[in-house]
Image (tube, rainbow, N blue to C red):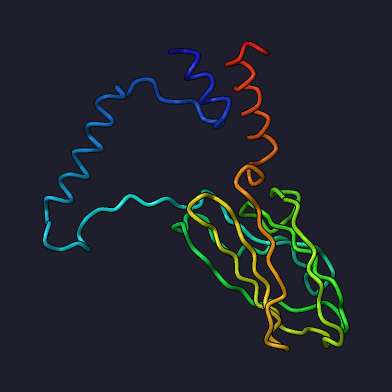
Length: 189
């Protein structure tokens, strides 16, 4: 249907191919999967598995050595989910008392080229030295929720967690397109 092709193009930014018979595409995909399973049923490692992956990098906003805010990718693009990945960071000054965690999605280092989401504020204990080590673990669960855990290496204590539920980790553009689609389905255009 032309309307479906238009909607797919609008939502993905890519014009769908209409020269492919969808029934044949599904059948060919199923045949490839069945062939790979049949090739070596006794060897589970030879079986093709379909896994969900991240469509883009996920990270946090950091301040670099020059004081510039940048995107630091923790979970790389195409990482199998669910997953959790740890990265090492440090405080920016002696006796820093607050850590503002902002979650990013995108593969660029520049903040104006990625989506920056609301995060959360974590209190730091008093007396931390300059460049005190912090371990940041980012987990991406099967439901699409992103969890960021921060651990104070100096005092060997967890500092807390910030999470981004699935509806919030959609880009502003994706949210708008979803709203427009739902309105059009209800006749509210």
